[in-house]
Length: 209
Ligand code: HEC
Image (tube, rainbow, N blue to C red):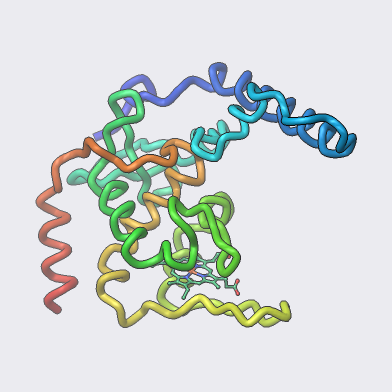
């Protein structure tokens, strides 16, 4: 089944642009305040715009990661990679994005921080997923990663043998994409699409085999 753009309830690009402009302005004025270093507290309006809890929408990624196809409750973008589908004014998540949120917070957040925001140990995956392809993502979680060019010794473990991760690789990827584009703000998802039969079957085969 093909999805028309109108059936997907993302904010229009026109609605996002002023937000981006406001963020740029907010950043610029914060830097100015810091440089002066004399002023007391920053303008509370500016502080609100920089609130990490507000969603940072990326118009280009929202378009690139938009679902154009659905098969058995699983959504795909125009590049054929799994993607999220968020409806009901940003409140209702497809099963995989919802499941990915839960798996992420069980398996990844100890190093990568809550809501993929990053930590001093590991990078913010909400940023990594702006550039990493589906294939690269699967390769990294299966095989691990260590940046040998840096002096750091932080290691991304290989999860290739861990079914709690590998059986939910698409879920994790879908969730992290939604964080990268800003389609999903820093919220605990409350409403979700029903778990598709295909997901139940794949899970059973993956965990049992
Ligand atoms: C023990 C800590 C730890 C855990 C747990 C962990 N990671 Fe990582 N991860 C890292 C570190 C450290 C790096 C940076 C490695 C490097 O670049 O050398 C990394 C890098 C990555 C990258 C590449 C990021 C980039 O910008 O290149 C991805 C993707 C990734 N991790 C996904 C995951 C996922 C998904 C999970 C959960 C299933 C997870 N990680 C769990 C420590 C961890």
